[in-house]
Length: 176
Length: 180
Image (cartoon, rainbow over all chains, first blue to last red; front, side, top):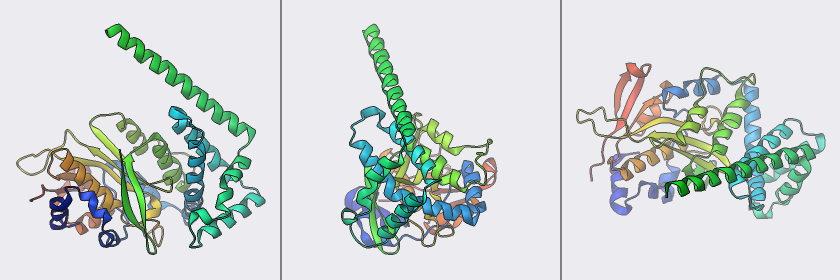
């Protein structure tokens, strides 16, 4: 990242991030090992450097699976139009998903392996047959208890937001 | 505000990711996916929790916190302090100080070969310089590199000011203002 190139970009468009529209510049990035800055991050780097091969293998598996399932879960929940409680519901749903991924049945494991195999194929996501089943699979994965917990979080959030907004409105009225 | 950015996804793809203000959901991914999976025990270290500091910073006007996201996964994070820090140059210019810059574990060659994404750290650094320009600091950015990361900042021509005894001997790096 050379200041002469960055200054040239500033003269051209006024925004350094426009460099990311240049394929050559994007491809020119080096593979990075450690980039961490900030004293508080030393324990994080120590954790990565000290992780066992088994832990790293498990994380690689999670990343591959979640890079497919999380966008599907997010899109599904967004379609429910939950408004301000969306983030809390999504976070809670993620926790339930992580827990289920730790204890898959053999049938669920087979489906995940098929999903990962399909992901390796060079076809657009819209044409992926197994991926298209993801929402149905998630709906079957989550239990009645999961949905109750997720509903409770949604209800708590809505209640909290209503009380907060009412309080804000009251304060404004008093000031006027 | 959300910006579209492009990164290399090995072996040959260029993918479009986003960079935006960090959400509590993304901080949760740091706890669950970046760290907990790698721990031998389920007990987090009680002496530190950088994700906790990020949570606090989200609501503190001195700080700006941004995350890069691709496929609903948090790929990198940067915490900027924008009001109090000054340049190490004699003129003591105001600058953007990088409190934290971190990439997800799977984006480094030592862990994942090839890495999941290439260029996360460089993009966050570029973003910090852009924020410095927008805040009127002319592109000045300072940070303290962790020991294993110094080569990264040297590779990207960030001037090295040597070890800082106030920061446990970490080397301080600082980009100067752009000359246009």
